[in-house]
Image 1 (tube, rainbow, N blue to C red):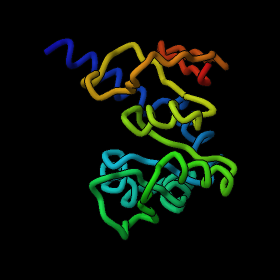
Image 2: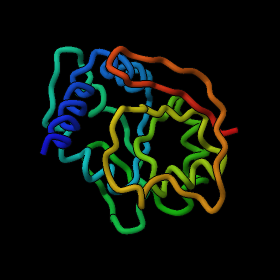
Image 3: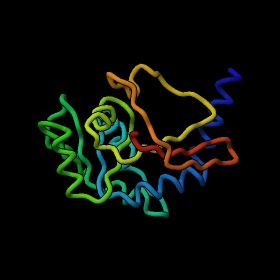
Image 4: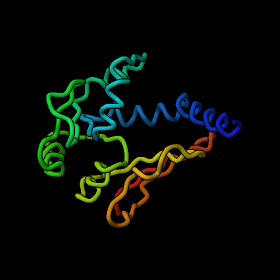
Length: 167
């Protein structure tokens, strides 16, 4: 029980952290589009449309065009989203020509496919002093993915925000 309380307190403090807010603002306000896998899309579309804030973050995020990679969903999609049909890597190459900055969330099959196709410019990883979730579905490829460190920022809370690019 005590471990859960500490873990929850750490998660809660990160969610309320000005550092988290600043990092999220930089990514989202700088984005022209969002690329999501099915699970992230389904999770986020349930949450974000009902959100508001005084910074305009939710309004900006909700208005961004979203592209969803899925083999199980059928279009049309809601929440300003378009289903990617056909080859995901080819579609993302076209989106990179259309948009200046595309952000993506998660580290599952879509992230692995994008890394393998050479379509990832940066990986932003929040390193927290606690572990959450099941590692079975995380970024996995048939081979190790080397990363080159672009920058690190540390916070008094113990959080480390690291930026990487595929090596």
